[in-house]
Length: 134
Length: 135
Image (cartoon, rainbow over all chains, first blue to last red; front, side, top):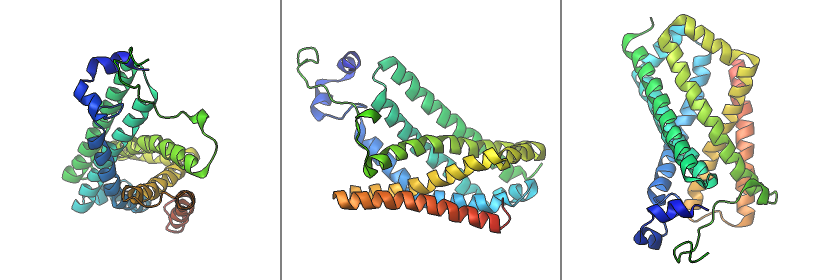
């Protein structure tokens, strides 16, 4: 078990509160539930959007993305999905990787991949929305 | 044990795959985690699609060509199942948060319903895609 890491970082108060392996379970839990609920309509919209976009070529897709509500919903879908999935994958890492260093590296890698993927996706969508098809 | 952990009980990690006896609720839980990883890749694919669109017609044609290949379609069908399964699972978890649906019979039924919704829903989505000429 992770005696060394938990002994180093857990204060007596945190132990008494018993917040589990990641030390801050409640905020994480609520973030997952709220983002999950937000994703119910967003992901359903995403499926319909995908059906729509599959039939359009480059020009049609660029024009579709530039419609304001599509720009917003597409950006929100990427951001909220990555917030949700970042948390979901982090839980799996914390559950199954007991070694402190490995766990920390994986948790940070997960965070960086999600932030980078989200930033690239949203900036690309905004670029198409604001400057139109090339 | 008590002394090395500073007088406090060691907390257990989550049970690993091999300690479970097969049951629909356990399969739902594991499937949920598996689909999370699939959707992780799926959202990055979506971000890649946006990048290809921003990069211009050639990049976009190349990217959608990959997605439209037989392998790409297989991946997209899998992602459709994963998205719908996660939507159903979120609804199921929300009822759990409200304190409902924990009896074994109900949990079995809602688990089977989530899987059925995902599979049937994905087939319906792809039939619609075929009929609207999206494929």
